Length: 166
View 1 (cartoon, rainbow, N blue to C red):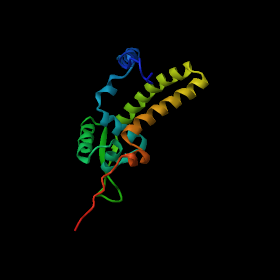
View 2: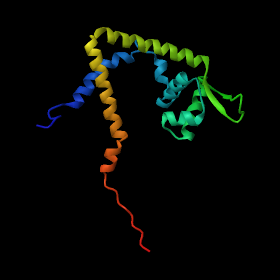
View 3: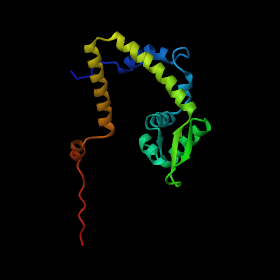
């Protein structure tokens, strides 16, 4: 019998979606958090943690080309969430920083997330917490492995060696 034979993944996914949908009800979750694109949220979180970054650093963090990053930062500027500041030492360098509106927004959203995490942690034993963390780490590892194969997996792929003949 195959490892996943007889498992109805579609049913499992939809069942989990039904269970977690309460997180997206307006009274449970701030709808403002859902008003931003994935890249906008990544930029906000990156700047919240780093305080200041240039466009190249942001671009590398969100894994997007500079022109995409420029558009993302531009939209966040229009929403008054970030601003561009010239570097004091080198006026050619422009850094992106969060506005106070953005910092307050992230602090509010963090409190909501912390509330749910605390609720979940209270329901788990110490052993279950350790197991949950291990499972989540294993899931991330499996997903990363598909996107970013290790050196061993890369070398197992046969490469055509080009021989130049004069």
